[in-house]
Image (cartoon, rainbow, N blue to C red; front, side, top):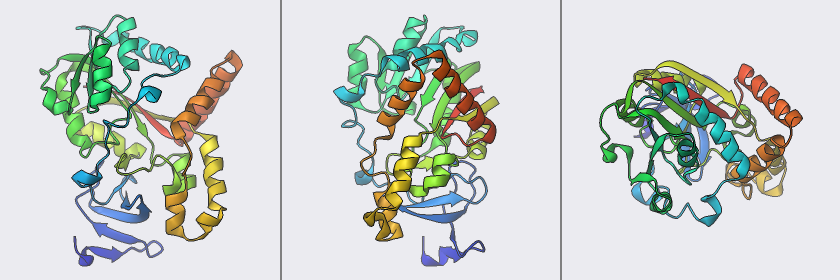
Length: 319
């Protein structure tokens, strides 16, 4: 792309450029949002999905083999209970009894599916995580989904939790998921919401904006368009969840001397030293300890869903 491809936009002089296209809707018109981890970030002018201007080169790509270790190959007990509740909702789709977890990570969903009487299969790009799950007796393919060459219509349910934001071509992954799902089968997925409250308040300082690990953060409109273009029907997407600890941390970081040094440095510094996953676990565990706290959590998620401001997109779609 040359400098002539970049032009000044009407809204506040923001840079707008034509590029390979939005990963959600294919629009070639995007607004510059700044730089994070040396990656230029764009926002689609049509669907508002946030994404990297250029995909990472081979040497820049996230190394998932070293991502997993003893500290993140187990999950808290309250997460296991929550996963049991989620898997229980898959029962109406059970015909062949086969379930696939794309990006199975620590294998917690595989375990929950097995407890519920499913025959679970996993796919994972991290050799460390794949070997861990294989050692637990699960059938796990190490590599990309297309490389597994599962038969057409092989699964009743496919899960893709916190996966779509990582892959270079989410449309290609969804097309492959649709292929391996039987007619009427269910896709259950989650992904960060690029237009949720944390994204709006913290901007590129939100820890979920983390290239080259996360390459795109979808809007509600964008993810629905992506799913429908892949051939899914009865698409249901709700937003839920927010981490107030991170919002407070991010706003305090903006007042720090480092953040005051300049906007570019602020974007790189915001979120530094903050563990989004760990604090989310702590908050959710606290809210799961009593019926009153669970009711408070349900109320908060309901309000975030109505306002469409939750930090996570929860997806259910049928083939």
